[in-house]
Length: 231
Image: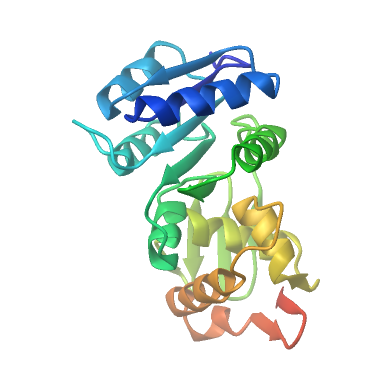
């Protein structure tokens, strides 16, 4: 069972970890646990999965990247909300972190108030329910079982990253409706404020390429507005 209120902070720099813990406690989170290595994080989650993990990437023993990958690979923790906290500031690194399955990505140095706000935003969304009703889309060129995480284009199985899959799901669920880049960032990435909308363009391009010409053409660019999945 997941603790409804506990937050796990995985940070090897004690002063930073202390500041985060203090900021979260001031924001009303009374149960904040701190560990300083990747292996300790995996052990803490296995003993009692928290409501959310704040995860540094540069960790001793097991890296934060590997911690995220391992948590996403296990059914018990696949939906556990994760916020990455790192000094890696490049856009490609942020996209890579989000593709690993992070729900948000914050770079150092960071504002403690912003961190607390991001935590609130992620906790409001919560984990995706394992008991959700299966959603299957069947079109002329695309079949997508969003519950089973299975996508076929023109009868061909397509392997998507988690972020590409969530982007496709969002577009298909809102088919024939234009979704702005900001809306997609909020729905798929979980951002509450404007970040780099180019991230959406990059992911749409990759998604079109993987799905092939027929399905890719169904993801229309609406100039000046955003994207739309058309039937």
